[in-house]
Image (cartoon, rainbow, N blue to C red; front, side, top):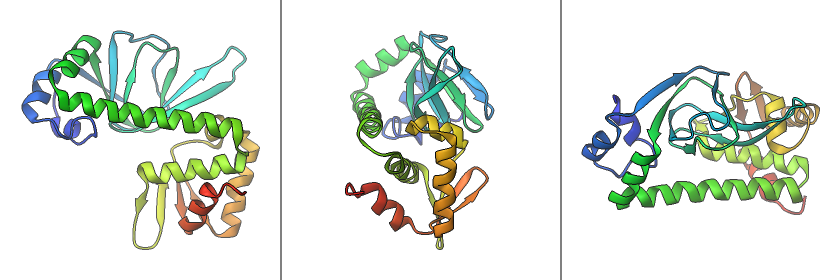
Length: 223
């Protein structure tokens, strides 16, 4: 495997020496993917662990009636197992590592630092899942949308001196499946924020002009 620097730049492997990374991943294979490409299907690679080296992947369930439900968005550095019944679709161009389950287990047993990193990543994943469930069950759709923007900003926002930019890479329909709403509601929500001057909508990104408003509305439980 090449480009070990990319791997060591992720949360999971940032504390591991290069010799360990080379030893464990020298025989793994990588796959580059393109935006909108379906990367995996249910139980398609059940003997492998996916490591997202670059890019973002939407993990979702697909039903016979054509409906979809987005479970999570995998960012660079995330880990995902190949034995679930979910699909994975690329939100932008990127690269994926296929790591055999046996190699992953060996790494967990032999390198304590790696095991601790995995626990941290899985803890974040569990927290995100619980937040998603809580939002769907207890919170109004606008609250869910504010929290969605806020979480994206924390995960991958790019800030300059004047604005706060969030790379979206999602259609309004895909956002609707994440927050349990409709495309029309999501359209109206973003249009209202733009009319308020809180955000500017551009292709594949949101420019947040008043991030303090997003934070307040995402966190204020009295709304």
